[in-house]
Image 1: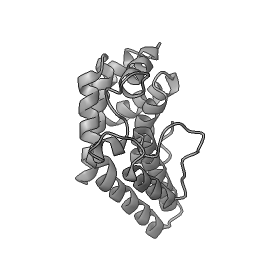
Image 2: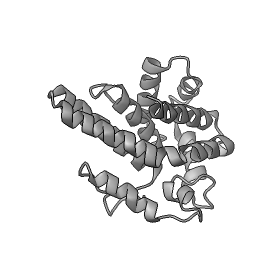
Image 3: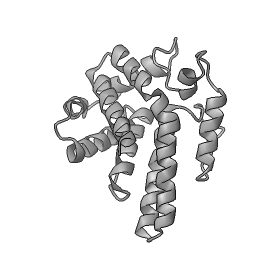
Length: 196
């Protein structure tokens, strides 16, 4: 992971990488590097360093909570929280996919997760902030501002609506303190986006 796209893209990249690849050393190191630069007092940093040699337990714990094979303890899908009936692939999922298409992103049909999977939403925000950074570097400020507005709108209309119950579920069901602290850090980061 690099900081070439600025702190917002770096943060989203660190969070989404842990969702997609919780046992990969590169994802964990990216999170550690992000925290060392942006929140060196974070308890998540302490917990992350405990798994630097072997993060496989992190994947087991995340999968147990959010993937299966049994009942989902913590649904990682926006539509489950917003629909009111705890189902996947809802109208909210379509709304999220429509947002992605604003910047030319589509979910690959071979990918097993719907558009409103937490990792996909974080990936989208990483992409938007990376594109905005590129536009700023090219001195295309109108395009950068438009991308910033898309990111803000997405956080307000989508991620903010369900990040709290998702993170609270992680805090409640995690076996490892790492995931509880990850949920705290993610929740604070998203909440901060709403107040800037």
